[in-house]
Amino acid sequence: MPDGSFRPEEYAFGDGGRYDGTFQDASIDKLKFLDVARVIAVPLKSQNYVPAKDIKTEKLLIMVHWGTTNVSDTFPTTPGNLTNQRANNVAGEFGRNSPQAKAARNLADMQLLSDDLLRNHTDFMNAKMLGYDSEDLIGTYYGSTIGNTGMLAAHREELINEIEENRYFVVLIAYDFQLFRKEKKLKALWETRFSINEPHNDFAKALPVMSQYASKYFGQESHGLLRTQVPEGKVEVGEPKSLGELEAPQK
Image (cartoon, rainbow, N blue to C red; front, side):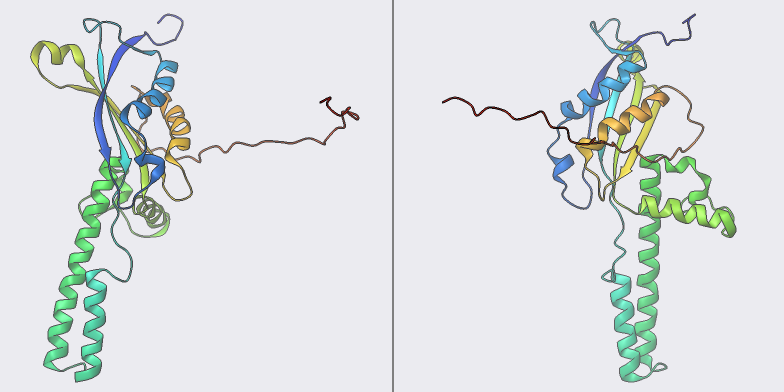
């Protein structure tokens, strides 16, 4: 608009579904689509996206996807680690160069490779879901790889650690609804992906803050992955003051 504000655009929500992660989590499991949509509608309004009053004027269909990521098993109980432990036991019993030990070692190496491939694939899928695939430094098996030394390696490791931790996420994809009505074609106009780590957080409480921060990029270019600390609330309690003595209430 001439004053620099955004022209109002009417939209309707679509339920893209909830993605369940590895563990049960009451803070997200108890929420329904409408619960999530009501929260996201507030920051959408701050960017002049308004609920449509008439299907004929509705410009956008905003699909809402939310949930928690699935992460690879990094514990010693992975098949590769268990097979590797058995190979060490066989080597100790029959000797490192024995046929039994060599066969067990070959099996362990194959299983460890399988573990790595599964981990890389899971990392890659989570990176795409969360929007981390815009960051070339992810460098997973299925993604691109850039230098693995110095600051690049440290940054890459930091990103990998984030996507290998359970995360709450929301994905908003806005489609041209009028085109869909007329030609039955889905054309994505913009998408915004935002997430926060699951440990020590509560999805229901984090969602308003997450969506408010992300709202400045609804329909706007973010120029890649953005990471920030979620602001924490602070309450200051001043010195207590006496209000004087009060009379006992009459019965």
